[in-house]
Amino acid sequence: MPRCGSLTGTGFAAFAVDFTAYLAERGSSDLAASATAHGRRIARSLLDEVALTRRAAQMRAGDAAARVEQFSARLAEAAVHGRDAVAIANAESARLLFALNDAAGADGPRLARQVTAQLAAMLDGDLRAAAPGEIEQGDRERLAALAVAAADAWRQDQRERIEQGLAAVDARLAAGLKAELDVLRGSAAKLLGLDLAVPEPGGRLAEDRRFFYTTAEDAGQTELLAGAVRRRLPGELGRRAAREHLRREAPGLVESQVGRARGDLQYRLAQAARALARVTEQRYADGTGRMQAALRAAAGMRTASDAEAARMERELTARESALHRVLGLLDSAQPG
Image (cartoon, rainbow, N blue to C red; front, side, top):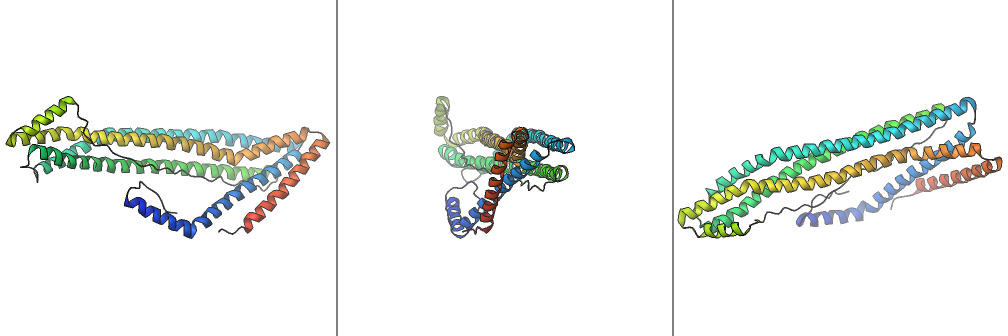
């Protein structure tokens, strides 16, 4: 599927064409394949719940009951590890925020010096002999372009660092959950004699928003008066005053653009951090929640009357049959 970055003008038009072509050629089949895979995960997880409920209900006493308790304790450990995983996600997000703020503090002045040097070279160029008003207008537009380019390059670099950091911790936590589910799968086989599917939850992070820079001069009454005076100074005196004004303005303009970029990235990082913590928590809940529900249901069956236990067993049998029919339909489904 085509990726959508920050799209403006022709970039958006190109993306629209690509995305339309994708929908026409592959969109339906890809969507159907994704939905089918998700449906299989849910159905297999529900079948695990049925099988675990039935087996745990049968293991009522002695060594068998002890093995159920051991499996229940292993599930409880997984829940604790899920909370640990959320803490790791939050800690990595905090580290990325610290690195972003540190980079802004170090790179803002450096970029300001770089842009000021570029401006100085321009001031000695085409507009050197121009009128003060032309210098302020023409070179300020160039200064704004330089400031935006510097801040945007910095922002793209920092965004990539953040995205890579989040993707890395996301992958690490997903791998940790996979290992956790592998252990639960093995524990079910060893302790309960069950061959559970224990499917891995899906889901990844993705976010993008457009961003705009503001470079218009924020001039108060004093600066408006000073600008009017500069533009009316005669000859080289006026040109020198205009050039000095732009040199003084350059560092603040650059650092303000870097500050705006940092603020935007801080907001995005906060949103992504909340999403990462939420996704991590949900993955663990999806991976273990049905097994926990199965053990609770089994405990209820063990204490129920014979008639009530028989009714619950009939419900489990009907559910199991329905789920196998669903899996059969999903296996025979053809995308598109």
